[in-house]
Length: 204
Image (tube, rainbow, N blue to C red):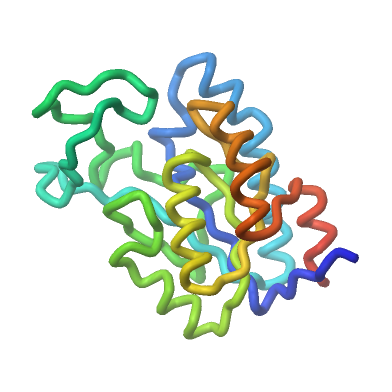
């Protein structure tokens, strides 16, 4: 039997649903988000109707990149080789790229979570905000599934939150990775559901 999602104990968390990621003018991005954005918007509409907490985790990089991770790695997020000392392109505070997309426009009551690493919990106030409102469940939507969504999911699990993964309201540059996480990893950490299933689960 499916378990109800109780709005007052739940947070709808959008991860990096930003102009710079979603509104890029390339065919792959447009195709990947053409269903993800409407699904995310349907979740937001339901959250608004049920007075659910809504939070937006968004990159908050300084223009000089002095708070940006500089760990050694072989590739970028698209698996392209990265030479030592290469400066990776990031979206900076105050730019159009870091604004939330219009389809998910925040309201004053929502929570903006500036983040500096992949996890929305790492050195942010997200955990404090959730616990203050006695939230025990997170509905997670956004991209990329195998990067920030996954990092946030592992943190949420370690902090004992229930997580519901909106499978068709998440996406990745590497869709095989998206499917791997949704089919092989996230079911061991929470509940993987379609947008329609989640809408049905939300009580009220």
